[in-house]
Image (cartoon, rainbow, N blue to C red; front, side, top):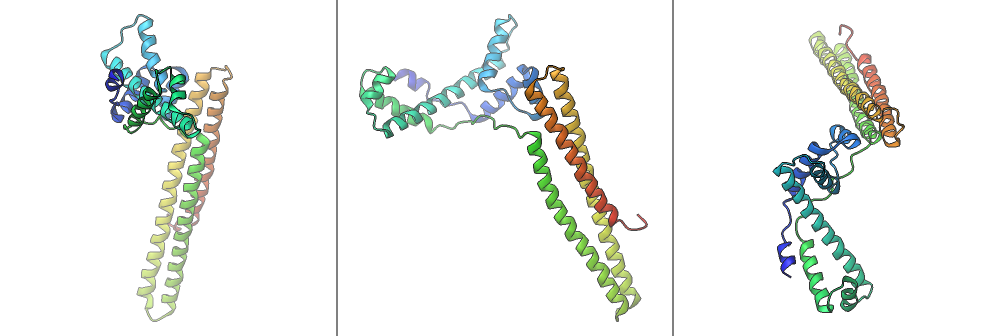
Length: 268
């Protein structure tokens, strides 16, 4: 149990995250470098630790900070492996295996030792863990998210158009009623302001979409540059996703500009 007690501590999740970022920033290359720069996708913990080891094997000095962070990731991986082991043991016990059988599988002296191992792993499972980095959304997923946001913005624009029409109708009613010219003028001013606000809002949305499209075009160009004509399937798919998303963003921007132009005041 002396070894288990020594291993009982788990690394701080914040330190695990910081270690992933630091080592990826320092050692990622090729496609991994591109994924880090464009999507902030870190190396896997195994990749990051091996990168530090490879740096040493090539004869280049490795700074103490990188060594320390690699050790943090090793501790994190050890905790994940212990948690995986206890899940397997749960499945074994739930399937009717006894501790004596587990002892034989684990090369332990007896069932009591297997039980102690299980208790130790159960305690390890309760320690705070840092999950692996979630997969970054592909460009087509980002485009779909943008499309949903666009639909919501379109609904808001529709409500704004209805409000503008209502103000115009109200202005017409006041013009023909008892409120007189002053009331009609105020209503007309409010209607004009509503149209201007709608036009400004749609132009801002369109500008944001066009900026996103430009960024996606640059990302596609970087993927193709890294590929260098080698025909890598992953890089080609990433580049095409970015290009498709950029096209959709520009189409949405054009629709918003049409909306804004329809309701822009005549003197705008």
